[in-house]
Image (cartoon, rainbow, N blue to C red; front, side, top):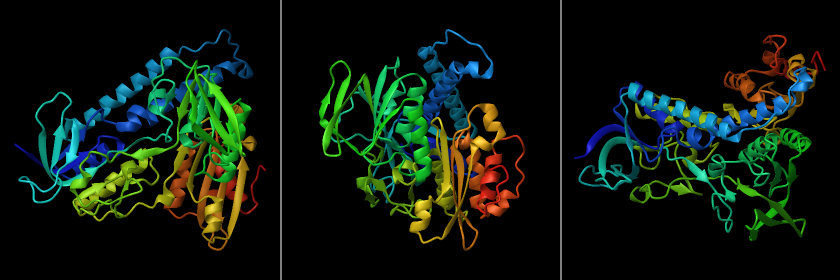
Length: 473
């Protein structure tokens, strides 16, 4: 017998479970279908576990440098098994929290693989959900008024460069390594690759990053990417750019060896293991999209501003629709989609106001346009830039590298973009995000008093620097 719901969410990741909670708050009867663990990639295989490892790497690095702070420490060693135990405890705690939220919202959770069916005896429209179970139990049928697809994404690999999960890995397998290798080749200099390069280097691993483009971190402002690269090189990361990895030259004997074409000649790289980090692809296969009129373009589900697909009662959010592919973006897309189902007239998301973060060491964060994007869009820009080395709290923390860069429209004074690299900038970027939402100007940011001594003073100084009025530089 089929069970009816107001909303069935396919995928219990960050976007999916947040949407389910919001729908429950609006009085809907909601079900979530998840084939593995609630929390999805972010909680189980992405944001949370990787940041746990990054934190352990940071503590290890800082402890080795304790003498600089007058703290004498010796015989400092890393117990990687305990590092992994801590990571797993954090994941389990947060998983329990999500399950608690589902119970609080009276949201039914089905642990199985959900597939969208076409018109059937249950409904004249496509959208009935058939749930398949690994143990072979009979399929469950759910008949929803609305469907939300939040199936997320998975790591992509290069054609011919097959992942074996042990020697050649994606980030999914790397998170569960039992021991650290002595050396690692990372294919891809995007956000995930650079975070792993920073983490492994701080753990003492010899890291080589091989990037196809002529620069790393292609989504970031050019000066931010250059600063991150400079800091990575300072701690021993070997960054190779403009390099095309040749999968047919891959050898896996006593580790891994691969060739890359650089400036029309081949160079050989060897390491214990290889991490392939060349982006993520949407999970759209086998979920029944062929039974609908939903449009796929370049692998991603197409939606309108309120995340409706071509089937107006079927919505899609998060990585499966492309875009910024960030957990906090998926969450807010889910809220907008659910409020639209409930006729609450939500405002579409303005992606120019959404911050993005890179949790390497140094951290980087940004919101709005890069300088190149602003110029390409025809803006006459003015720039304010201020270094952390002139901020007292940064010197106290022993992390004085990096800076904040603010881009403004010379004609209107509008804030166009804010870009940061340095200590704790992923925590500080929210001020810039709020400034973008409120359409603030650098003048208004400068006249917001930033307490002393704090790292946030760099934001006020950078805002004053737009007009050349910075105090400490």
